[in-house]
Length: 214
Image 1 (tube, helix red, strand yellow):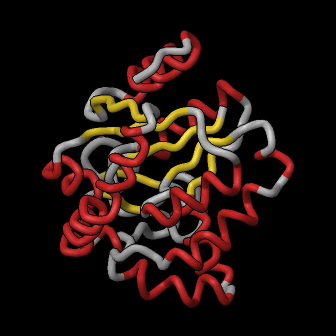
Image 2 (image 1 turned 135 degrees about the vertical axis):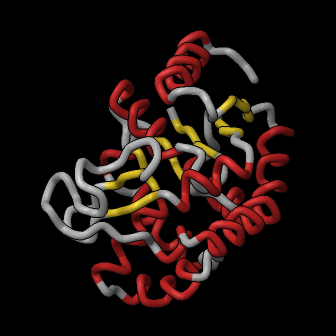
């Protein structure tokens, strides 16, 4: 299974993709996480990408393609993968087709904008162990403190409300053509991302198992 998981920032792509990879035994490849790892490690790619990420803007295609091409060449991706956060432009979609010969399914999680702003502006992360919390739906036991390691939680620069609005605007503008690209090929399945993640996972897994077309 070679799947692409679409949805605006905060739609829950990571949670749902992670659950599906456990079922299917294929890697969940999240380009956002990979980029943040590059930034933490101080690599050349990370340094070049950081300014774009902090502003809530898309990282240029050449940087993303370099990173994804390396990841998809690793042994664990040969049996399949779920891509989260890639492709986000038509150029990236074309490049992905060239890399792997096409994908099997594309999932689009639909969530209203106000709900996305609420989710993202309330997200907190631990700078030490990378644990993630949400102040309304998944708060730490002690406000502002990581349950796992006791470090002070922070809000990422790209989760500041103004950056969130910019991220959503960029997402709509840049990825609408990519959704159309996959819709025209009969690969795109849209689903309601406001439901519990378990319901969404079950729906996707059942559709794939039955070989259903969108």
